[in-house]
Image (cartoon, rainbow, N blue to C red; front, side, top):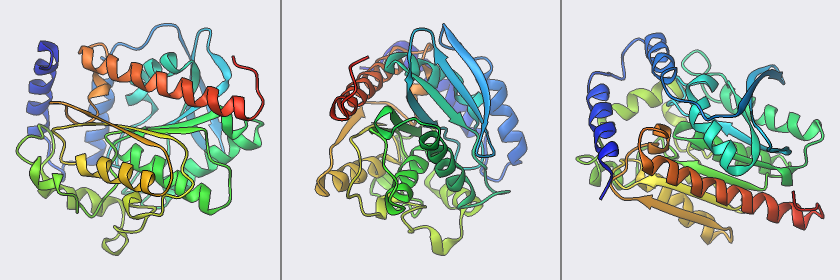
Length: 309
């Protein structure tokens, strides 16, 4: 049974999403989310540093006492049309603390002003800049939520296909991986999902890419070849219409010889981790993420001959 706090958050956010239309003025959507995020309590003992990397505006979140040689590249969600380092600082700060690494949040370009592949190009460029700056891939993990989860997998596919060394691990939070909406949960969870209406999805997709692109692996990674992926942790709520995106990507990674772990959280909804500090389930999930990233970064470092931090 979920906590009372989670029930309250679910009800309040459900009411908020009922008032939002996918055709609403996008700058207004962005501003509203920024305003809401400003009211979230950030993680303590985090230093904020601004940087421009490969022409991309970025934020560094550096927990006190972390191992700064380890980097979590975090790609924010927001349906490819909104979200920023500012909307995600609170949640990612907690993830950084739990993982013992500093986090980098790039403000990749957003649709509809910059449709596919502009944002993906930015994420790939930032990762390559980390390597060029002397950070070895075994010291890097990559993660993202929702569209940022899709961007995370697309970045991994693009890097692999370019022959670039992949990071030590990846973590996906409620990833949006199938813009064609072919998963069975689009229908089976439609009456349970407190936020999303399946009929709205094509409107959002049209902001990001052309109809003929929706099954391209760099747009919808669930259709990609998953060979050579690093270890992946996927967290998803059981009440999400996007649940099948998570189950299918885990199955594909494991079938390709990789190591993917799926956590389906009962009664939870899309990116419930975002509400850390508001409900206990969020912190428990983030603790799991931190433990996974710590383990995978330590394992990759040991294989590369580094001493444990």
